[in-house]
Length: 448
Ligand code: GLU
Image (tube, rainbow, N blue to C red):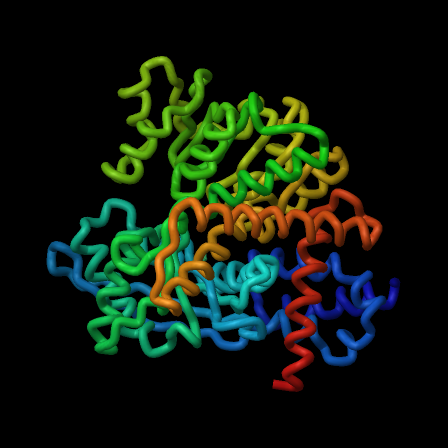
């Protein structure tokens, strides 16, 4: 074991040296490879073929200029990215993130995570991620459209239903996917429905895709609770964020009888003792594209804490559904002290490594994003299936498929953690299952 651990440490040092300053990418890599020593021990062929080294190096990284004009006619310049991380299991697959904080390292961390997440779904999809340092906040609809059109004017040559299939992520939802698809279709002169997912169901999209990340996370939590002889009904939940993942996680939790008492945006926190009114949140975020502080205008008994910390609020179950590293060690301490016993990541890498260590030390059921939020990309793969067969499936059928996929992911992670002597450690379980799957495909293709 010692030898395998040293090898992994050396690989990690190499990753840091070759990717200076990309701390989130380093964090994501370490989180995966630090759990792989037992696998290297059982499978010396992975070392011989340098599989970990290969999985830590993206297959391709594209960076491009995105010029556009704002409503005043002023020229604006942003930077666009698309990283194809691994295509052993299928075409590159992963979302686009539009957020001012986006750097190459952000996209690489997300694309790396996507490799393992996508493998966990059991569906034939490789991994990728993209985006831009564009801030959609406060932009008019026309500005969003012009930005998306300019972004796609470069991106189109790199994507395709057999090559790379983008979708949404933070800052990219149904509206943006519409503008991106429209521009793609116009440039290539072909209606290639399978080139993007997250499309509106009224024109080639799949039912349930919008809901799937949030719903899937709740299904995963339900399975974790079952193992402990518990159920969701009656549990007090805190769901951070108020974007697509948070909204539909809340919806499914409410459908299953849980009480969601808080949500948040980057300005503050809403605490609604009676349970969050989702119609109000959806009206503010999806229709008016406003800020959560407006919630109390509709629900005067609720409390808005400007600059507040959502993890201060006592709960049984926490669902970090906002963004990376939003839940740190001190937040974890507070959650544990307040009686929280399960944490399910709807976002990508929302808990810091120190927080995760604390959860494990205290026997908290902790579901890493790559397992718990895989329902989104899994339903994207179902959208690709529908596009390839020019078919449309019902909501009920698609949701059943999603649920089945999440139950399987949970089962595989749980079983593998036990098999490797780490019962209840979903991080190790998820990493080992998915690593083995990608590794075997990479080996089968030879040195390419
Ligand atoms: N951005 C989502 C994720 O983090 C979905 C990606 C997709 O559907 O391709 O998994």
